[in-house]
Image 1 (tube, rainbow, N blue to C red):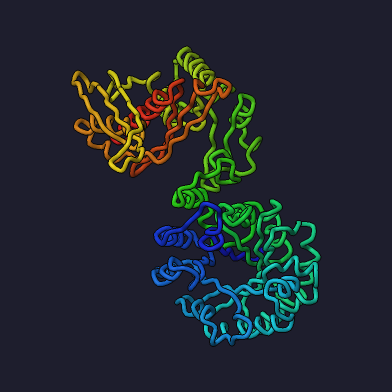
Image 2 (image 1 turned 60 degrees about the vertical axis):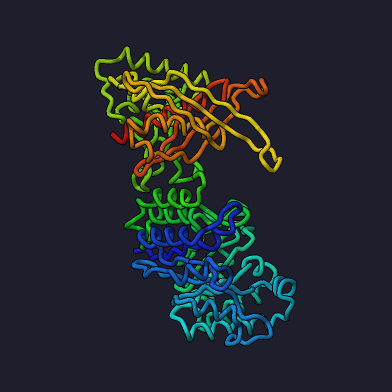
Length: 524
């Protein structure tokens, strides 16, 4: 049986260095909880003493059931003893029993970053690791810039690892800090490392600057390494870290290694998207394994082949990773694709061949006008139900009016002002409403809600979470055709709707109307 691989997640620290990412205390507690549920071996929570959020996190850290919480820190400072270094002791006194301490293994960085002698750096490693290992259950030594250090001065880089191990480090982590190491370099370097560091104590942490972090992590496992560090969705500074999702999926599903995560590998898609949603980031659709397009097929020939045997275009069963197969509706779609999609919506197409062909032509015509249903599933579902089922609209629009102006306030400053009014019918009852908003779309949304809430109280549970406009005919300048995509959610679902028009307010209303209708349909 193949050896067991430990997975170490540093999303809450390394991931926080991603441009545009900022973890709140609540974010960190939510994420550590879901990572514990799926059995990540080590969860690095942050750097105690570095900022108030990390300090509060370790004070608020719940008892974990399946994972070990880890605090991150660094070697004692030059000229101080480990006992008298406040930064080091803030890490050691954070309340967890495992710490990861970073030290220099590159002579270049010792001379140019720390500006101390090579021997003094080795003494810092020995003193710090020895001091920490006597106080805590587990100390991981993060050998920063190890691979560059090895290529520049292999004897010194290896000596730094030996010092850490001999001083009580449980794990030695080889870090490719600038992400410049290529896969073909690993076998020789790791073979030298294993002469002094047992495989059971050896881990790696790759950054993704050359797009090789996943490859390097997998190759390291093949060469005996037993711990892989990385982040969910590859978060991290510059080009990010090794994507722990990809690493775990490959070594478990394809290479047959044992991991604590193995029993929960089907949760990876959900956790990946949960983390992005928590950070208010859009999950890249083309993420391997867990992206919404990872098993999406577009085009008649591909669709037909996948329907016969999914192995034609899928390297694993998407269910194995908690994802799903998507047969994309597009102007390349064939009849079988449409029928398959309708079946998933529980729409019976038996004996309705003419209606299916008509619906296919409608889809193609809509996409010719600028609609794109591969990213607006709710609008597609409504279009289908309006065609095939006796779908009764919840309301009908009689008219709307939106005004937008910029005027001076009492401080003689220009401020925008938006107002909208709508007239709708619910059955034969007429409702009129007007509302102000931060902008024209907000005002229109509020006016619609005010008109509907008396009849449909559930409307208050609808939240719009994203709004995007794309110019479809840029050559037309300000009179261009535009496509509006709205993302919405309620307590149970999250969905996208779409509208296309030469008028951005009209396109917004079309998408907004679909969003409200879909919400009311699912809330019945």
